[in-house]
Every structure is written in C-alpha cells, then in structure tokens.
Image (tube, rainbow, N blue to C red):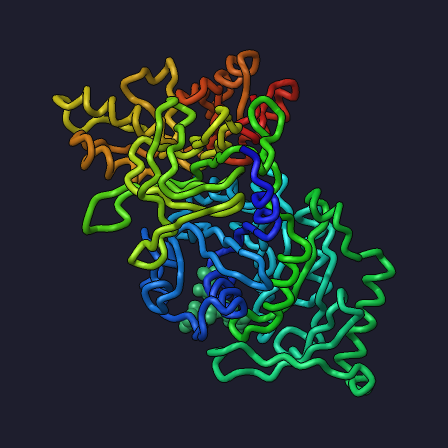
Length: 526
Ligand code: G4P
C-alpha cells in the first residue's frame, strides 16, 4: 500500500560512507560529524589505534568508550532535521570484498584525503568502486592544521588521476599548517575563523569574520586570488555533474579540531542525494513508496560472544519497515519474521520500531540470509546481484583430513554461496583442488576458520603467485591458456571465465600480444 509519508521520510535521509586510506582520519571525522550533529557531547581525541583494529569495527570500540549510538554497520544521527546514516566501511585490517559491498548500501561517499599524503592506494580502489556504481563523491581534505601539500596541487592531482572535476566549496586561508580560516563559496564567500579548542576535545568555535578587516592579511589575499583563478577555469559546483559522478565538491578542514566539519555536514544535506527508487532486475526502479523492500549488504557472525549469532544488515530500499512485520525472503519465497529487528544501538541493541528508505536495520539470528538477498512485502521484487570484485590473492585449497572430504566440500560450497571467497576451478587442476580467490587476504583466514569450526573439516592453503584477474570469454580462454604464466579458471558462482596473471606487467604484455582477446577488469559484466 502506498504511504505518502515514505517519500517525505526518504527525502530527509542521507545515507553515505567515508572512503579513505587508513590513517587519513576516518574515525576522527566520524566522531566530529556526530559531534556536530549533537549525537555526542564530546568527541575527544581518538586514542589507542591498537585497540580499535581487528575483527571488531572501529565503531564498536568507539561506542564502548563513549557510549554513543553506533551499530557495527551504520551510525545514525540527526542534523538540521535530516537523518544521516553513515555506513561503516571496514578499515585496513579487514579489507575485503565486504568493504566494497557496503558501498552498495549508500547514496553518496565522502572521499577523505590527508592533506600531506593526497591520493593513496586504498582511496583509489574505493573511488573506482564508487565510480563503477555511479555514487556521487564529496571530497574532504583533512589535516589542514598541519603541513601538507598545496591546495591547488591537491585539486590537480584529483582531476588528473581520478578524471573527476574538483569544485571547491570551501577554500583554506593559509597554507596547510597555517590555517587561518575558511572561505565558504556557497555563502557569498563568507569568511569563517576558528578559535581552537584545547586538544580538539570539543568543537572549535567558528566565527564569521569581516572580509574588509582581512584585506591586509596576505594569506587571505592569496586565497582570494586562488578563488579567482578557480572561477576563471569554471570550477563551480554543478549539481548535475556532481550527481553524475563527473565533479566532486571539495571541502577543507581538520577533523581533529572540528574545523570545516560543519560545512561538510551542510554539504551532505544540501548537495548529496536522498534515497532514490532502486532499479530492479526488470529494469524498472521500485518506487520509494511501494511496499517494503530491502537488500542485505552485510552479514556478520558472532558479534556477540555471549551467544553465537548472525546479524544481517539490511538497507531499506522502499516502503516503511515496522518491526515485527512478516517479510518474504525473495530468494526462497519463505516468510521471515522481523521480531528481532534492531538498530543495534550500543551493547543493548535497542529495538528499532520503524525505518524508511535509506535506513539500515540489523536482523538478529538471520541464518538464512546472505549478502545480496532481498527482503520484501507485497509484490515480489529482485534487485540486481551485488557486484563481484577482481580478486588479488589466490591460493589452492586442500582438505587436511581426507576422511572429512564430504564435509569439506559442503563447507566450500557454503562459503562460495555466501560470497566469503570466490571459488575457481579448472580442468587442469581438477575439482579436488579448488582455488580460492579474494580481494583481501583476511577472507582466506575467515574461510579456513569457518571450515575448521563450522564443518570440522580443516583445510590447508597453498598460496599462488598471481596478482591480477581479468574476465575473458570462451573465445579468449584457449588463447590465454597458451600464454606462459597465465591460467584460466571458471568461477563456480556464476560460470564466469577468469584469466589470472602473475603481475600487472604480464597482463599488459599479454593484452598487447593479443589485442582481440577480451580482458575486462569488471568481473561482473556478463
Ligand atoms: P583512520 O580511522 O582513517 O585510520 O584514522 P584516525 O581517525 O584513526 O586518525 C589517524 C591519525 O590521524 C590519528 O593520529 C588522528 O588523531 C590523526 N588525525 C585525524 N584527523 C586529523 C586532523 O585533522 N589533523 C591532525 N593533525 N591529525 C588528525 P594518531 O597519532 O595515529 O592517533 P592519536 O594518538 O592522535 O589518537
């Protein structure tokens, strides 16, 4: 049944993620955003990296320390009457396909750069995923309170390496390390100065400065000149270009001192898109006010050590979700009870009563749910499968205990279905020795652990030296198989043919020698 409130509720939501390289300041920025949004009263400097890394999300630790409302999958807060759902992208230690998949749950991403380091490898990889999925990107250049690169040079790097046009919204007065204020181009070049709070423990106080009084300040004059230069090359915000992923609004600041963070939050609300109707496999988007539907984008097992459980995180795509409602698991057609839906706030897992498009809900004990599954009420709906990403780690998997081969095979099939790892087979190696392929090596650890503990069928991995995979086709496979150093596999999940190469250089030389052979970096393109 159509519900007019749903469209209004969707309109006041923004669902986004922060993509960055480790150490750029994602945790600090997350806290600073929540601080501005009054979700917590004191951000406090982020301490003790060691404790925050590992299997548990950074946020769970934050939540433990500060008692703020955090799920391990999404942080939810209200600002200017807008509900912000900040979806966590797991950090370095557990970098894997999961990291990529959570990006399917957001409508926008903040690309966070360290002013000194600029574009770093993990940022580039995550950026590619956003681009592939058409997710608009807002850029925040962080750590302007300490020495770093030149602002214009950073913009040049973004434009050249990412082929996206940077359109600054705020502009720093003063070089990195000598930040004297920000000019806000969206507010007729309003100048904001900050009085630093001690240690960044609370938000730096911002005050509007009189440009006339700044006219003798050389840093201010330089900033104005730079802005004139930017205007002359047309670096102005254009909503269509941003939403099409062709331009990125840029903000400058310092997350640790809470400088520029409010501008960024305002940008997310004013510029970033609210949830839109999601395309279904039939091509027609599901209207926001259609019956409830949602997609599982993350499944986490054993979050609570006290009881072994499995939580499925669902991004609401359409309709209104009410806790307790009967939904249908689209893959099996079976009903699924949502009595145990929770927002997973804190250790208490406070119960969630209602949710709208853009929101993230956690379903406890969702053993039947897999990443990519759809839940719905009313007319059945299927959303396109989540993308599979190019693996970079490969290893042959063998059973340790030959008397447990049956259980071992069952385990491998299960892990394959869940998308824990990609399973590759070839005639050359035979079915007895499947090759596991992963985006991050931690996926292997998870696979081995689960084989040993859930199936009592421990496995042994023998690493292969391949580094790059490309999708090929039936015409290309025999040609590639004859190329020295190259192997071709069938991915069991979908029958895709993948060619793997020992190095990017080998890939380059093979594609030069065989220009007609398909070598597609997008593994999920049929
Ligand atoms: P991550 O989640 O992206 O890995 O980064 P995190 O927030 O943990 O920040 C990484 C380091 O960068 C931390 O320092 C943090 O304090 C610092 N940082 C974050 N934002 C800023 C900023 O705007 N300016 C400056 N100068 N530093 C910033 P650390 O020394 O590793 O930890 P800590 O002892 O300071 O907590």
